[in-house]
Length: 157
Image (cartoon, rainbow, N blue to C red):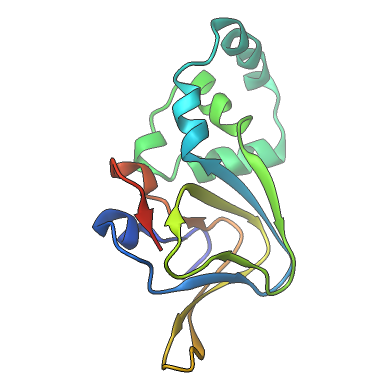
């Protein structure tokens, strides 16, 4: 995969178990947008929305980067700025150490991961001994589980 690519949508669309795992091969930083947060954003108080609108004027390189990532997703592409900032400020920052697993085969998918820094590998098992094989590497700008919210039920990896 190339810069700003995404992974994980097939198991979401097919509501099936994943056939690959995603593992950090270097120190990584992700922005994580959980399904729970997406649902809560629909119930945000008007006062909080008004306060966040003031943040739209602030030009921060990290906010610009994550805005571009979020807007790669077709269902977020035409969001108004205040809704986009609700998402940005709802991201939970997650850190992975070298070789720490982000998702494993057979797990339910509950979040979208925006790779902010680092490199992760997508692997599949190639035999009964569960030896794995790297099928892809994802870099800064990649999105994992991008089509998570296109299905009404939780999918599995």
